[in-house]
Image (tube, rainbow, N blue to C red; front, side, top):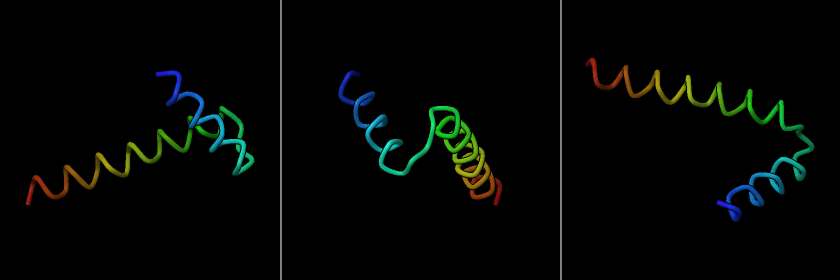
Length: 43
């Protein structure tokens, strides 16, 4: 768990994002991935 937190923090700092921006990116990514999974399962 500590390794994951440290990795995410370093990645956010590398791209210059705040924690808040990182949360929004994760939320939007989840919507996109969830939408794609739903789209492929309903075909």
